[in-house]
Length: 128
Image 1 (cartoon, rainbow, N blue to C red):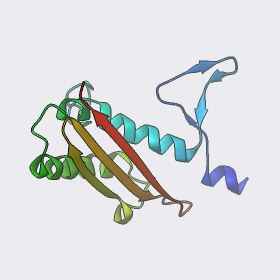
Image 2: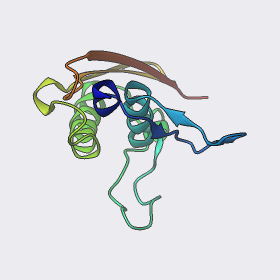
Image 3: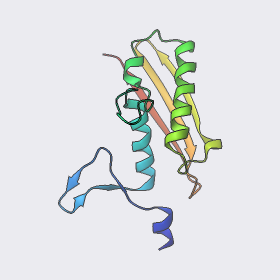
């Protein structure tokens, strides 16, 4: 029972319906799904939360350099801190953003607040 309290099931994002109903994700996968929502949702895309998301795909067409990386890092830290409240220890949330040509490399590391498990996610977003 204690394991279930520390690691409950969450509805998967994007929503999937299987034979038994809604498909679920474990806590670690759910947090990754939340991070992906912040990364890939364009600002203004959500009606009741127009400030949600950073629209990372559009950024690969901006001049790729340290200014873009710093702005993206700050926006991402602010958005993730809000989106992951209660799930991630905010003191452990770290973001690095770098790039080359039409590619952005993002590394996000954090510690889950309830189970003290550290995660490190890497995303490579490339312009076409």
